[in-house]
Length: 455
Image 1 (tube, rainbow, N blue to C red):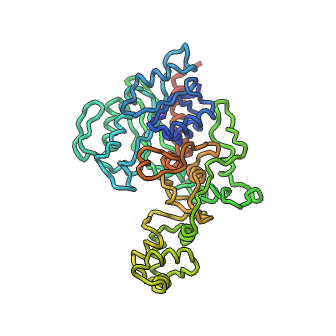
Image 2 (cartoon, rainbow, N blue to C red):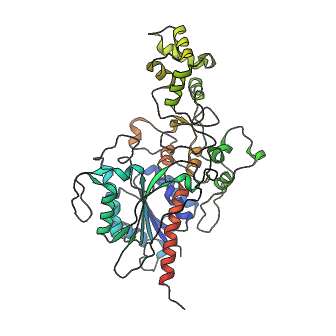
Image 3 (cartoon, rainbow, N blue to C red):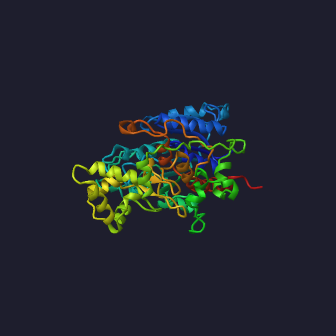
C-alpha cells in the first residue's frame, strides 16, 4: 500500500497534486470553501479517488474539525473495511497566509494568524510520522501578541512565529527542521515564487524515524529553468505550435504528471480547459500595449516621464485621456504634455489607471508570483490579461485539471466566493509540492525498511 497522507487547508488541490505525484495516497482532505470543494472533488474523481471509497473530503472550518470527525471519515472508507485504523504517514497543510503576507498591510491581530495553532492541534491528535507546513515568506518575520499554545502556554508579546511553531511542535513531541525558503523556479515551475516550508517528525521515546530533509533544486541554473514561453507559448491564439513542436514542459502539461490510482494518465482528448479570454475594450488593449516585456506600471510611468510618448499611435487612449482631462486642459495641451513627458501624476493615472501592480511577463524569463487578481499580469505575446489556464500552467497544473465555478468575481463577493483565478493564485505549485513530498516519502520508505525484519 502507498503511504497515507492527509491534506489540510487543501484549497483547489495544488499541494495534493504534488503529494499524489510523489506516490502518497490521500485518505482525507479538508477546506472551508464550497467553490474549492467542487474543483477538488471533481479532480479527485478523475483520478479514481472516490469519496467514501478510498478518500474523503470534509468541508469544514478547521477550528471545528475534530479528531473524531477525521477518524470517523477514514474508518468509514471502504478501503479500510474490516481493518484496524491505519497509521497516517504524513500530514501536509498550508494555513491561510493573508495575515503574514508582505504584499499587503500586515496585521498581527488578523484572526487567520491563529489558524496554524489549529493545525498543530490536529497534528497532536492525529499523530502522523511526518508533518509539512507551507506558508508565505513573511511568516519568517511575523510576530504575535497574546498567543496561547495548544498546551495552554502563554507566549510573550512580539514572539516570532517560527519560534512559536518550533516550541509548539516540541511540546507535542515533534522535532522541527529549521524552516527553509524554497523558490518554485528551482523545482521546474516557470514562476519566481518563494515559499517557506516547515518539516517536522515524530519523536516518541524508543521510536527511530528517519530524519527527513529538504529537497535539492532540480532546476537551479537559469538555463535549466522553465521560461514563460516554454510554459504557455502554445496557448497563444494563432500560433501554430504543431509546426514547431511543443516544449517538454508543454508536452508534460498536456499529457499530465498526476496519474490515476491505476497508474494511468488522465485523458483529456486534447482539450484545453479554462482558456476563455477576457473581452478588453480598445482603450484597455492600447493601454496594455504601452507595456514592454518585464515592465511594471511604475516603470512605464517612469519611461513616459523620461522619454515622452506620442499618443497619436494610441488613438483610443488619446481620446480617453483628453476626455477625462478636458475640465482642466484642452486637447492640444494633453497631447503635447504626453509627447514631451511633462505630465502630472493625474495625467499618468488617467493614462495607466491607479493600478501600480500590473506587469507584462517576459517570455524568456520566469513569471513573477501568480496572485489572485488576473489583471495584475499582461501576456508577453498579446495585449490581454492571462487566461485561467495560462496562470495554471505557470503554477505547474496539468491541463486535465479543471477549475470549477465562476471565472472571476469582485466587490464584496470576494469575501465569500473563490473563483477560478483565486483558486489558481492561492495554490501551492504542484511541482514544488512534489519536490518536498518526495523527500517525505523517501523518509517514510527508509523508516519502513529499517523496521522490516531482516532475513
